[in-house]
Image (tube, rainbow, N blue to C red; front, side, top):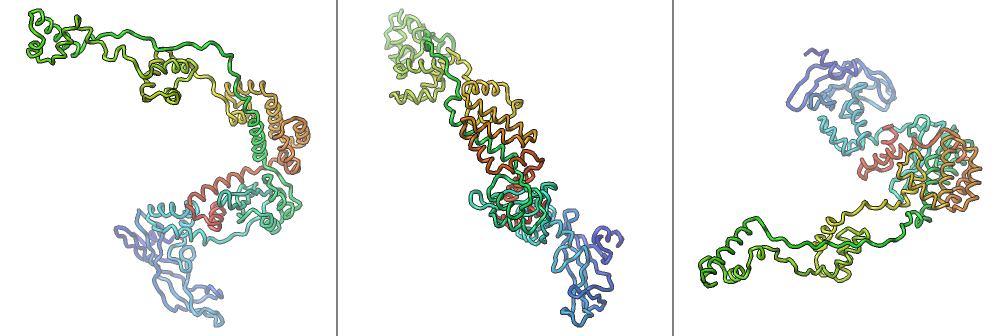
Length: 530
């Protein structure tokens, strides 16, 4: 293999290094190389020097090849600085694209590991790197992320702002997103007015602020960017409206079920009594018939019962039963036929409950146990099985709609409702006028939002306040407190959708880091991964 080919395989990033040899072993590949530049620049004063002080060997890990670890043994030189006033007497040359100060990896591998840490964090990144024959610890990957340089936050024209939880219910931070490029531009450690106001004041030029109806963000926007247009997010508006609808449905939940039909006579059910049939086939039946015939044959010969027992090898009681039975079928009827059961006093109650539609054996057992039934559940299960065989149960009645069901039907697009759901909603709205009025207001608001007719919002609020729907009236009053932002949200094309997407991505990143998601590390991953 020629040196030119070796140069193309390794250290192709620069022409200032010459590869002299490659040593291949079972688990690693060692590339022997040396720098070739005649001079180097001092990192302190920038003076070029060609005076060599000494040289030494640097061992740099590089990207693996063929599942073998690659080590570059690079001979570098130490130069004397020619500038007398420079604080450095000597300095080591650095090869652009290959080495960096105090680095024990090549720049290519360093960049790859930083990207691996940004995507997978410490633990998962370490496992994947080990699979690629580049062993690195999880703590090292996290240090590489933290060592990434800080970049100045750009000033977007349209800014999206929202909160996210560092510790849900306790600690919250703020994410800032450029709505036009859909990229996160900064993370703030809290959600206070002063923090957000300071950031906006340090980044003049924001024209539009997309936010939810948080009073803190509204106040920070007015103080930090007084000329910006505030746009309330449509998703949050619809979510607040759905909450108001749910409160209204909850107040009238007693009217949601369909009225029961008029009570009629209850059908009487009971397990039909069937006559016990003797066994006709089987070894037991054949044996009993043979013994019965043999016993009666000896009786006709005037042989005593004791002697018959000795001759046939039967017990005296068995011989007596065979002798007293005129026909063997009398002996083949079930042993328990005609006997009473401890369930008999409770069968009328079970029959009545089964006729009323209660067919679950476990529930029926609990009911009769409270009434003093001393037996086990299996006895009830057997009897209920007999009832099912004798009286197959009809299809269960339609399920009672829950508050969440009705709320979803009202706030969902009518064309996306199933036929049965649409029919139930129509029946409910016909029975409950308040819910019918609520559904009408919801559809009117949906038309305002979808058609971007924010200028008609005041008319919608006026109609809501005339109706006696307290939850909707409270929602409308809240809109009046932030009316300009809500009108802009229902008119302009901007929304906080990109911000919500990054919030979900932050949740994923936090789970990847298994509790090590300190704010500085989280901020680096969010901003640099984007």
